[in-house]
Image (cartoon, rainbow, N blue to C red):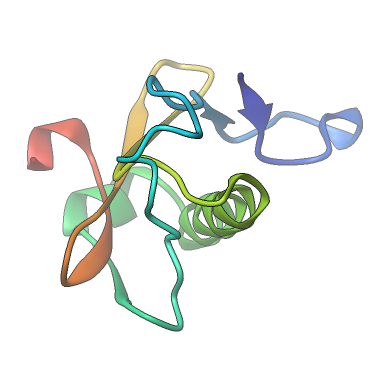
Length: 103
């Protein structure tokens, strides 16, 4: 289930959400990417590769999708039109935006 990170009628989409590999009703699909409950950070590499507004928009999309589906898997991935990837991981301490090579 790909979702675009913009209104594509107005121009290029900066990122596409890859969706998730496990079913939304899977027991591990229990993360909400909620910035009011956990610290949100981005690695230096992620900030270098993607604009801050793009990272924030992706985070908002994940938060909304988590509410819609009652939770998401801890790892969510996006990619841009050039194939560059941006990951989001929620763990016990924080929500982190990072590049795959940062993991």
